[in-house]
Image (tube, rainbow, N blue to C red):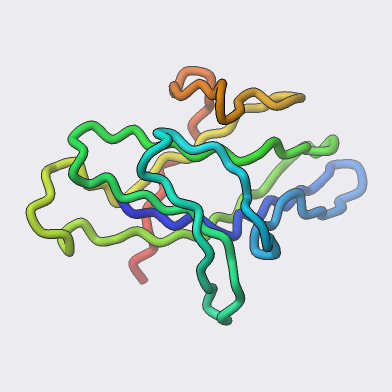
Length: 146
């Protein structure tokens, strides 16, 4: 699976004042994002360009020849600041598995989005836990083919 994740944009809507606030917008990041990736090998954080040729930070992984992929990418802690509802926008690309010759059945064109509500950092590069159990699945995400 090749996935470039960028422009993670979290916008919240508070119930009391109907105010919108951006919690994280990686489109303006000029330095490393510092997200935690698993496994340590395979993931790369690189600079790229968006559709307007602005420099953006992205993550990519392509372990299609590994028969049992388990790729995780965890953002830094995002303080919700009392928000009751959070909207997440993720911009990504996925490579078509049929475009890669001789790939076993391990190639994936979707990914699962999870969240974990906490008041503090739960994982770091040295102590991350990579199991689905503590996380709540939001949805399986596929590329828009329009």
